[in-house]
Image (cartoon, rainbow, N blue to C red; front, side):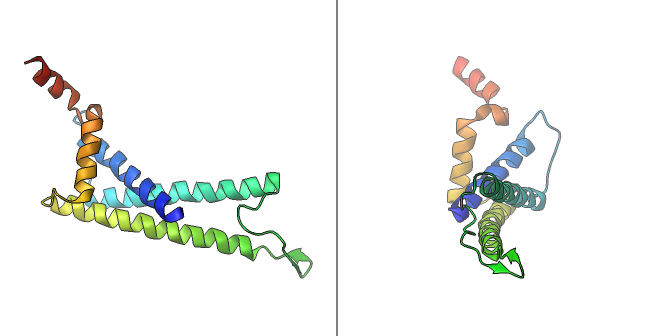
Length: 146
């Protein structure tokens, strides 16, 4: 679940920054490195917020989202390393998924020759479904009126 969510979040971050970079109303031209870094950081940020939410729900409602129940006392305190291990494992898996998508996005932006790739087809579909984000709505209206 964490790998899939990191991939989806990283791609969402990539689409977000890509659409801002291509918007004709925004005077901003970002490098492929920055766009890849943004998509990675976007995914990691949301995943970290999820882990904070898991901790908060565990603390408030006493559930076991972090898999840290049935703890034994060590030196008079409960040993919470199981929860830390779960959180760290989740964040590492999130980072791997986000890194893979960011790397693919970076090479996609650098080459842009391979328009038959799955990454490019997702871009084309997103642009087709959301023309207002790319300033294409006015162009399509002009074409439709002719």
